[in-house]
Amino acid sequence: MLLALDANLEIAGIDRRRSIPLSSFFKDYRRTALEPGEIITAIKIPKPLPAVTWFYKIAKRKLDDISTVAVAIAMDFDNTGRVTRARFAFGGVAAIPMRAIAAEQAVNGERWNQASADRVRAILERDLSPISDHRGSAEYRVAVASSLIGKFLWREAA
Image (cartoon, rainbow, N blue to C red; front, side):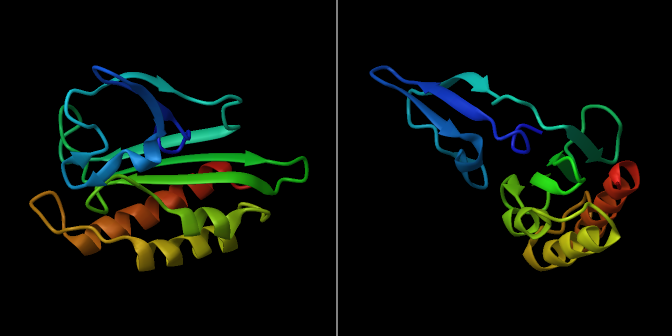
C-alpha cells in the first residue's frame, strides 16, 4: 500500500540522515537500499491522500501468511471523472515489490472503465514476471493480479 501512496523513507545511520522514495528502496530479492548501520526512522506519506485506495491480499491462509499476490491501487479523478493520478503497486509478482508504471501512464487522462482496465491487464500480462513456488505458479499470479484489476473496476467504475 505504501508504494501506491508514493511513500518516502527517512533513513538514519551513524553519521548521516537521508530520505528516499519507497519505490527505490527495494533493489533485488532480499536486498534493499539500506547501507550497513542504517535503519528506517520514519515513513512519510504525502498529502493530499488519493481519492480512492484499495488493497487486496491473496494468500493461502487468512492470517500470518506471505502473500501470493498483493495489489494496492490508488487513484485520483478530475471533476469530469478522468484519472489524474493512478498507482498500481504489486507484491508477489516480481523479485521485489513493484509499481506498474506503464499501466499507470496508460490510464492517466482516461475514464476508469472496462477499456482502461483492459489496457492495464494487457500491460500486466506483459510486464509482470513472477516466480512459481508452493504458493502459486507464475501464470496463476498473473491471472490473480489481472482479476484484482477487474475487482477494482467493479468497485470504482464511473
